[in-house]
Image (cartoon, rainbow, N blue to C red; front, side, top):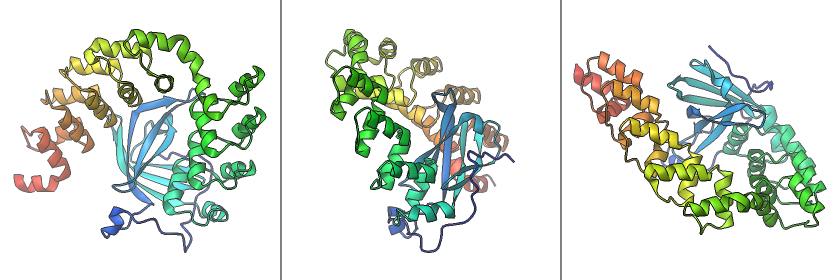
Amino acid sequence: MTFLVLTLTLISAVIPTGFPTPPQTAATQAGTPAAYDRGTWRAHIRDTWTQKDGEIWTSIRLYVDTDREMSLSVPLRSLEGLDATFTVRRDAGQFAFKGSFTDGLGTGTWQFTPNAEFVTAMRQNYPGMTPEQLLKLAALDVSRSFVAEIRGEGYTAASLDEIAKMRIHRVDAQYIREMRAAGYDKLSVADLVKTRIHGATPAFAQEMKAAGLAPLPVDDLAMDAHLDEVVDGQRREMKALGYGSLDAASLVKMRIHGVSPELVREMKDLGYGTLDAPALVRLRIHGVTPAYVRELRALGYTNVSPDQLVKLRIHGVTTEYVTELQGLGYRNVPVEDLVRMRIHGVTPAFVKDVQAAGFKDMSPSDLVDFSIHGKRWLRKRG
């Protein structure tokens, strides 16, 4: 058994009596209460990003019910070699995970145990905190010290949702103080988050101030943080590729998400024409690279649409997965079937087990149905 511990906070206890019940959902109205202390999880350990310190991170998707999901980020190295059980501890509480990893895809169930001390402390300023909000704070690793520092900088009216946004976008007390020193005092939470998203750092604000351009309105500051780079190089290159009508906001968004002229050129060379800016951003966000497209084509998938490419990547349909299925006799499986197979846990190992059990010549739909209703298939065989 392997345990993953991300903080040293000791978690013990449950939600105190009288903790507010969660809001009504479709599931609740149908007679099944929404539970914010358990659910299912999925993780694709190949979907990663690199922090400034060089650490590689990945996400665990937490599914609460049919309506809600959230993300919990962890260092990739923390998931290496895990078996069926691991634990993530945060100041707000503890996540206990059960499940397994196969071909880089992790699935299973999770249960959340709140930290009573955290709940008691938070309820002093946020008496209406719901179980859903508590779960979100835990997933984002919002600690009591983080909240106290934000409030200490004068943001005592900030809601829990606003504090969560500040945590997501790394707006901490130091960032607030540095922006204040650059001439941007008493910014709203929304404006602080906006400057972080667009890279309008305190250092950039200081440069504008030194150049006699401060204080710029926050919207101009956020836009100007990227315009020089865009105008100097990207605009000319994108125009040569057929994107001459893009406005500055679209160019900035493309640059933020890594849609480079090289990426656009390679996708055009692969036959995808002049995709619009939102489509290119969507491809990049979900990790659809020219290399991925070429690898799929080598496996026989020559006419995959941009939307299908995104769907394949979202659900973890890697070229390794397709190659293994082909080795088991499943060639030319339609894209939609590949996605359904991946969603429902039809792995190469699963296919081998099914075949070894005597179920031969099963279609992709049969395999999905077997994965969902295995007992019915066993009765059918008998």
